[in-house]
Image (tube, rainbow, N blue to C red; front, side, top):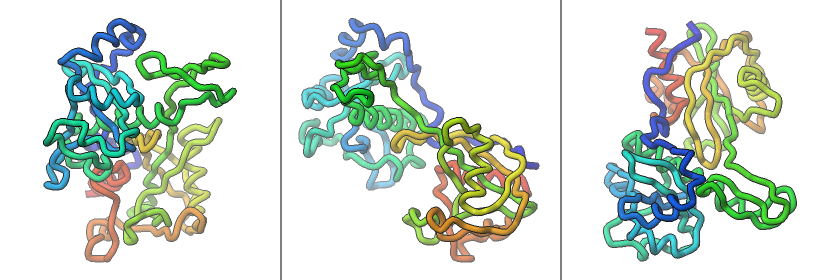
Length: 309
């Protein structure tokens, strides 16, 4: 059976926010809300999020009140309205201009850390909000000038649009789709080891960006052929995972391998192999590792394993 349902939600999904897009154009409401004591702020410093308990292995998101965030907003960093969390407004604010933002905050507010290292330990809703904030601030800090004429851009729509002050072109946050797929053939699946993997023993699913004019299914077949030389037939959707690191979404599939011979692209992969279910279940003893438990790659593998029991 190629069509295997997702067993549970992926990391960074399940946002508790009502994005309340209709409020983004209400300039008076946004202005008043920025100073409201009930408003919450998710600060981002050089692509890191503010959290407590990271060193103890029990991380939790730290959202600031308007009063606590005022010192950060005084740094004139970008900000954006994210939505309503149980009716409380939530904004992202970038404080990357500060060499060290922690002294600007009240004591005991935690530290700025890489969300990807702890996402699997955070409550799902918190991981989603922090990823949302990180993605928006990455876009805001890197789209200060117009890509059409080069003139400076001004923020609009509560941080969700940038309008060129020269040619009036409107720019919006972009999300780049990437396919990620577990290719299966009988009782075996295809995993590869990339030169980019920091873990030298890890084998993971193949993945790649969707090209212009290409469907997801076509992208799956092309990427697998290009990277591993394996022909793919049926392609079945599994689930998706936001990946704002910096601006992607992973669309996960199980795919049918039509051929067995592997011919890797050495620019993309260091190695690729067919693994049996028994080998994957015993991967530690066999000396190789699988993707992190909070990744969609791991979810694709685990759900396929479970489907074969």
